[in-house]
Amino acid sequence: MIQVYKTTEELSKAAADLFVQAAQEAVQANGRFTVALTGGSSPEQLYRMLAQPPYRDLVPWQQTFVFWGDERWVNLEDDRSNAKMAFTTLLHHVPVPQEQVFPMWGEGEPEEFAIDYEKKLQSHFANMPAQFDLVLLGMGDDGHTASLFPGTPVLKERERWVQAYYLEPQSMYRITLTAPCLNQARKIVFMTYGEKKAKALQEVLQGEHNPETYPAQLIQPQQGETVWLVDEAATSLLTAQP
Ligand SMILES: O=C(O)[C@H](O)[C@@H](O)[C@H](O)[C@H](O)COP(=O)(O)O
View: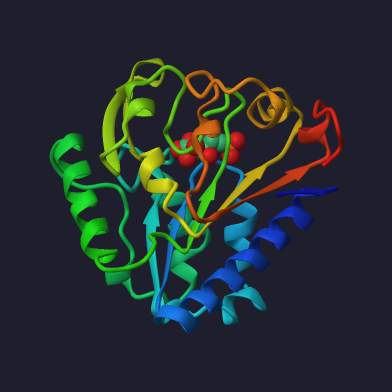
C-alpha cells in the first residue's frame, strides 16, 4: 500500500497514527507492543510528534519494547548513532521502561554483539505467532533499507536475524536485522520522501526484481503488511500515480 502526502508533516502524522494503532492493537491482543525503530533523518519528525501530546498519551509506553532495525557501530554519544537520535527525539521524553529498550550498541566486538542481540530477540519472541508488531524503515537514495546495502553479503542471509559487517564505503561496522527477520513483522512502514529518493523508489516498486541492487525489494513480509508513506516528490517517477 502506498500513501502519498504533500508535506512531511502530514506524512509524519500518518506514521504517528499507524504507530498508535499498532501499539494499541498489539497490547490489546498480546499485552505488549514490540517495535523496531529506524535511523536516518526520515523518522525524526515522527519521533518528536510521538513525544508530544496527543500521540504521547495514546501509546501504551509501559507495555512497549523498543529494538532497532539497524545501527552504525558507534557509541551512544556519537551523533551518527541511530539510538542517540531516537533517545534525543523520543525515548527520553516518554515513560517507556529503560529495561524494555534495547539499543544496538555495546562493548566488545560487533559480531559477538549481533549474536547476543539475536538471542535477546529469540527469547523475546519465543512462542509468539509473529515477531515485531511494527517495523519502521527508511530507504536510502541507493535503495538500501536498515543496513541492507547494495552488493553486501548480508543480502543473501536467510537464517540469521541479526548480522554485523564492515561497510567499506562508510568505513564503519553496521549492525542490522536481516530480511528474514524483518519479513516476520506484522506491519512494516516505510517513510520515504524527497526528490532524491524518486529513482530508487521507482526501481524498488516498479523496476525489475533486483534486490542485490535495490535491497528494499527484499522487504516482503510473509504474513504482514507493508505500507509506504511517501511524498509527491518521491513518487515523481512512478508510472501510474498510486
Ligand atoms: O542507519 C541508517 O542510515 C538508517 O537506518 C538507514 O537505513 C536509513 O533509513 C536510510 O539511510 C534513509 O536515511 P534518511 O532517512 O536519512 O534518508
